[in-house]
Amino acid sequence: MKSYYKQYNFVLEILAPLHIGCGEIYTQKEYIYENKAFYFPDIELLYKKICQNNSNNQRKFESFLLKNANNNSVKARLVDFLNDSRIRERDFAGYRIEEHGFESERSGKLNEIRKFVRDPYGNPYIPGSSLKGAIRTILVNEYFHDEKNILWGGRKGQKFNDIFHEIYVSDSQPLKNENLALVQKWDYSPIKNEAKPLPVFRESLKPLVTVQFKVQTNTKEADELFSLLKKLSKQFFIRYKEKLLTKVPARYYQKNIFFPIYLGAGSGIWTKTNIDKVDLSRFSRGKLKMKREGTLKLTKYRQVKYKYKNEIRTLIRNNENFYEMGKANFFYKEI
Image 1: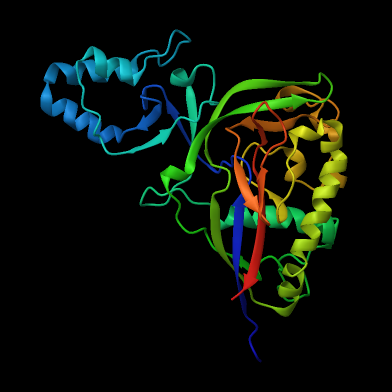
Image 2: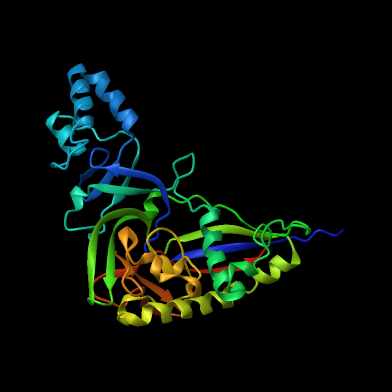
């Protein structure tokens, strides 16, 4: 039997800050804010150098790490410990993220920062599973319409048939820490007609960062399905727009350059689910309580301009520096 195989270069163009978390959080004890930059040192290397230089500093540092661990008093900051201990050195490996001016009114005192996922070499990247999940959302909404219609796994009396198993998405090529910015979570409420900042901060890819993947289809059926993705992504955006975006001022959502897709943390429920099948009664109480269609998930970053068809354009249409969290566009080409 002749095998079937096609491979594509798949390119994500980041249009708004995008965060893929690894589950880890930095506290103020683990970063230094100085000279308009956030420095995240290698804490193990920092501890070794402190121990080498002064045994008294070693005890002070261990006490510092335990300080305020279980109460809500003013949080201890690493920069204060180093300054109080007269440690001027800042070469403890790690990496820096430059300030862009819209992190928060309290830039140097962000209590917790959610870390971006990294490979074993410390490079940020987007796992293939994250992109594949976003692709799956589009296909479920615009092609299958109901997950019951998906050929998915083994069924009694039938051979194994899994259409998503036949579409392979690689992890992205490695990115750089210079591609990251720190951004705050903002919720825009259509009911209150206002945007509210929340104490959630994330390492996120900057707008106009280009991220490359390989996508492989292993059957003709899978390739035919994947070939519909561009058209279906536009249809899904229209569905999402009708569900939520038309209820907010147009200046708060961004125009597309290529084909729209949303992924990562903080992009909102409607970008990650089968829109027509959501049971809103599930979100009527508790921590997941949601009024009507919920809020538009925004964040802030500086205004970014780009050139398209010999015309200078901007990524956002408001003067408040709001971007849609997790918005990207894509295109792909067969290898």
